[in-house]
Length: 87
Image (cartoon, rainbow, N blue to C red; front, side, top):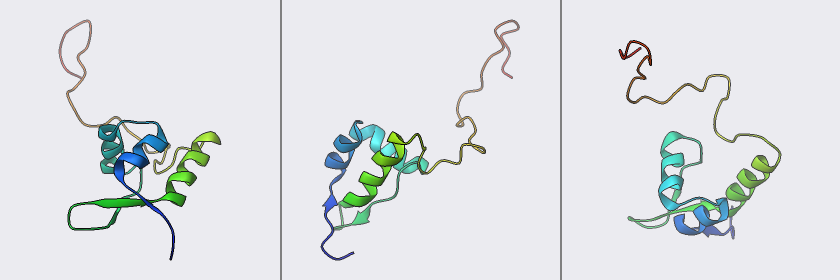
C-alpha cells in the first residue's frame, strides 16, 4: 500500500501497550504479524495492522490465535502437588 506509514518496533510496541521484549515474543509466537523489512537490520509494521489489532482487542477478539486449538506452550512439565512427580 503506497504511502502507508511503517512503525518501528519500539513505536508499535508502545501503541500496543507492551514492552519491546513482549512485542517480539508475540511476533515469534504468531500472535502478531511479522514485520516488513525496511533495511537489512530493521523491520516495520504497517500502522493499519497495528490499529486493527487494537480495534480487535477492544472488540474482544484475540488476533492471530485460534482459541479453540490453543494449547499450553512447551516448557517444564507441571509437577503433581501430591506425588511431586511430573505429569
